[in-house]
Image 1 (cartoon, rainbow, N blue to C red):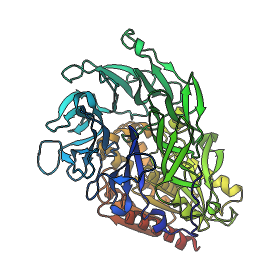
Image 2: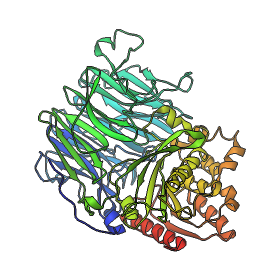
Image 3: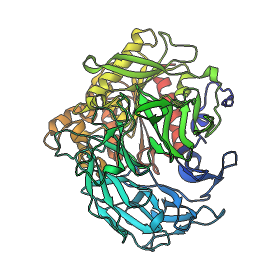
Image 4: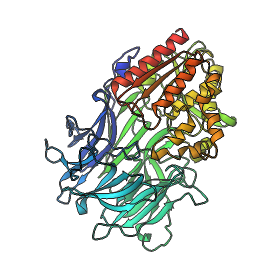
Length: 634
C-alpha cells in the first residue's frame, strides 16, 4: 500500500506546478463503479466527467471533446453533475453543460453514448442557473436547484426530457437536497440574507406525494435570522431511514441523528448528537457538491478537522474510530457497500483519489498527476501558534525554504480566500515553487478561518480588515523573532477576500515590503453596492450593516488609504469578474501610480473570479515571483 516515489526537480517551474495538473472533485460510487469530475487547466479550465467500472481498470473520459460541466448557481456553483440509476436500473449522469447552461443526460451503461439534451429548447442559452441535483430513481427524474430572477427554487425534470416542474420556492436561498432511500421524503437546506449559510441556516423536510410534488415542508433543525441563537447546518444525509446532519449548536459542526421512529411521532424533532468533539465535521457551504460524511449501507463514515488537520473515521456507538490511511487533507467523501472514496492529499503526496476497502482496511491512493519533486526535497508544514489580534491564540502552517529557515530568508505570507476558508496541509506545489527558490512561506489561519470551531470563525464578525490583517502581520513577526526570516523581505499575497486582506495589510501595517493581489477587494462600499446575489449582504456581518455603516466601510477600504501604502504591488484581474468588478483593481492601481509607487497590472479578458486557465495560473505565479525578486533585489 505504498505510494509511488516521485521524481526530483529543483527549483520547480511554474509549468510543472500548474500547467497540466488537473483538479479532481466530487467522487461518486455507484455499484462498484467510481466517477469523478476532473477540471483541466490545460484545456482552458474545462471540467469533464471521468469513470472507472471497477477498481484496477483504466479510467475513461465520459464527456470528451467540448463538454464542460459547470454549475453557476450562486456564481460559485459546484454540483454540476448528478449520478444514479433510472427507474429501469440503467446508470445515468445528468449534468449542466456550460455552453448553453442546460441539463443533459448521459447513459453511462452505453460506452460512447452521446449526451442528450433534456430541456425543451429555449434558444441558445438557458435563462437561469441549474445545479446541485440528484437522481430520483423512483420517479425517473432529476431534482435540483434553479436560481432565476433573484430567487431559488427546488425543481424536477424528467430524465426522458421535458419542462422543469417547480417543487418548492425558497424564502431566499436553498440547496443540498437529499432524498430518502425509498423516495418518500426530501430534505434540504435554506438560509436567508443577511446570513450566509455557515452563519445561520435551517434544515427542511417534506413528504413526496404520489404526484411527485412536495407536501408541506417544515423546519426540523438549524435556525433562522429571527432566532436568538444562530445555528448552521451542513449536508443532510440519510443513514437508512434516519436523518443525519452536521449542526454547530455546540460551537463545533458535530454530527447529529434524528431517528426514523420519531420522525412522525414528535412535533419537535429530537436530535441525538453522535459525538461531542471539538472537531469540525463540515465546512462553509460556498458551493454545492461538498460532502464530509457518508452512509455506505451499514456504517456512518465521516471526515473530521481537528486544529487544521483532517482525518477519516467511522462513527459507531457514539465513538470515533479513525481509519488508517496516509492523508491529512480530505474532501468529497462518498461510500457504498463497504467501499469508500474521497479526494485526498498529504504534506508529501499530491491530491488524488483515495479508495478504501472497509472490509479489509486496505487503501489505494492515485494522484491526479505524478509528484515532480523528491519527498526529501519537499518543505513540510510546521504548525505555528502565535498571539494574534487581541492576544488570541492563532494558527498557521510554516513551510521553511529549502535548506531551512534563516535570518536572511525572504518570507511570503499567504492570506487565504473566503475569508472562511482554511490553510490546509495537503501538498501544494505552488508553495513548493517558493520554498524551492529559498523562500519561507507561512499560510495563515487568521481569525475567521474554518476548522477551529464557530468562535474562531466569529472572530472576524465586524472586524474584516482588522483581525485578519493583525493575524497575518503577527505570523510574520513571530517567524522574524524566531530568526526564520528577514524583516525587510516579507511579502504578502492573496486572492479575492485574501486579496482584500493583502491590500489592507499593505495599508494598515508596516510589516510588509511588497504585495500581490488577485482579484482583491479594494473598495468595500463598491462591493456592497455592486456584487452578486449570494454575497449581497455578506459584508453586513464582516464589516457592519450597509449603508448605515458607510463611514466604517470607507475607513476599512484600501482604495481610500492609498497614501498609507509605500511598497510595490502587483495586481491580477479577470475582466469577466462579477464578484469583484475590474474597475476596483483599476482604481486602486491608478491611486498608487499617482503616488509614485511601483505598480504592475495583469488583466485577463476571459477569466472571472478565480482563474481557471492553466496559462493564466502560470503567468500569475511567474509574474509574482519576478516582481518580488526585482523589488527585493534577490
